[in-house]
Each structure stands twice: as C-alpha cells, then as structure tokens.
Image (cartoon, rainbow, N blue to C red; front, side):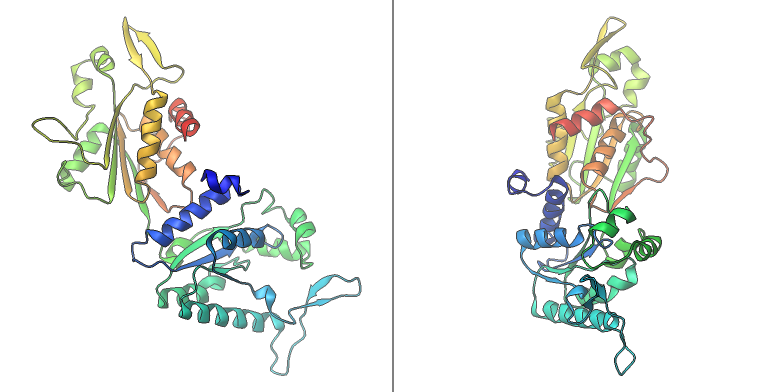
Length: 355
C-alpha cells in the first residue's frame, strides 16, 4: 500500500488496486484473468481511474468513446455526439457499443488480462454483454466506480466532461443510476460478517460443531472477552456467559491460526478506570494492532465476532471492517447490524489509528 501511495496513487485507489490484485492472485476459481467494469457519469474521473489501474495492473482498456465517428466537432469547435443514422437506420452510438463489445470479447478469448471496460455503465444491462463474455472465458469480475468528490454533482460534471455532454443529459443518467444487484450480476461471493453476544456465539459453535480441530479454514473468529478484574467486579453469572469458547492449553492444544482471542473491557474514554476499587482496562494500541493484523491476514474469509453483549466492542470491529474493506461483498446479520449509537467509538478509533 505504501509503495502505491509513494507512486502517486490516492488511498482509495490503492485499496482498489490491492483488492483487484487479490482477485487476480487469490481467486477461488483458480483463474488469474480479470475483467474490470468501470462505472461513472461523464466527467466523474472514471477514465482517469481506468488509466491508473492499467498503469499498475497492465491489460487493455476498451471504451465505446473510442469508436471512429461517434463524436463530431460542432461550429464552436466542441465535441458532440453524432446522431446521424446510417443506411440501416443505426446511430453511431449503437454501432459503437456493438464494436466495443466485440473487441472486448475477442481480447478475453485471447486471454488478455485485465480487460478494463471504460464506459458509464449506468445500469446493469449495459455491462451484461461484457460480464457474459467474461464468464464464458473464465474471467473473474470486479466492478469499480469513480471515487471523485463530484461524481454525482451534475453541475460540476457538466463542466468537467470531455465530450460536451449537457447537464440535462447527465441528470437523466443520474436518475437511472443503479446501485443494487451488481454483485448478483457478476457472481461475486458474499462474505459473512456476523456479530454475536458471547452466549449466542457459543450456540453458533455448538450448532456448527466447531472446535479447535474442526473450525473451517474459510472462517475467522475474533473473541473479545472481559479482563479478569472486570469479571470479578461483575460476578460469577457474568463470567460464565463471557467466553472465551475456543480454549487452549494442555488439555485443548493451541488455538487455530484463524482464531484471535483478546481481553479488554467496554471503556469509552481511557485505557484504565477504577470501579469499586478494581481496574477495568480498555483496548490498548498493541491489542488494536493484533486485531488489525489478524483481519488483514484473513480478509477473504467469513468473520464471526463476539463480545459479551455483541453490541459495542465487537460491533466496533465489524464497523472497522466495513469501513476499511468496502470492496468486499459483506453480509451482516439482519437481526444484529451495527448500531452507531451503541458501537464503542474508542475501539473503532483505535483500530483506524493503528491501521
């Protein structure tokens, strides 16, 4: 990541490149071929991002805008799209899309990778011919949007786009902009990002038959327990419901590599506080670093995370993953999604500060 930043790439683009690299080299299907579908309104910086991706990853860019005769120069010397029909009644834009789809398909048949489609792709049907060709030829598929601050500011887009697309046309495109269903179109696997109370997590382990020896390799578990002082403060009943449930020692062996156990208390404003004459200890920078490192190492797995109640410390970890790895198709528990009012904001801030 740091090498990419030093080369002039933005943080968001660095994350994009690293996620695409993982798609290339760690594909579940075993393929190292990749189709990148760019999305963005005219003037949003979509083509700039496509060129930077090509600069880092190689491959070829295919854009409908490159079709000869699609644009013409008006009396003011500005580029405008041509709408003149040919003898068959076809406009240049229709022929341009057919032309671009055909040459992208031919590139995929030859194994070019990545193939980058630099079109607006406002709706899924526009990208489908490329997706179909990718699936037929064993390609992985990534969808990348423009990440400029003005990507949905139609007045700014009207000023910035290179092909003279008027604001009125951009507004219509924005009205048609589709946000849902892209993962289903591309077949991108969803990843579980499940948060539990300690008791519910134990039930989940029992139901799945998980132990140190049977935990699947595609699952990563983070157990956040309370400190011994805190458990003593709160009593035996609290301690019996706190965990951890993955045990280690002479009778149990070592923890699996895909399990992390940390102990800190639900404190919002300091590392240590005294309650009833005993210390309660919050997350430390060292613990935050362990969590961040564990997440990064296991980022392509399903995550199961718990703290005592499943609402504050563990949900802070869930929110960190959502914020830090937005290109993954995360599936959170519908009956226990992160609640900003309950998340331990100190834990969330600490994780972000050390990453």
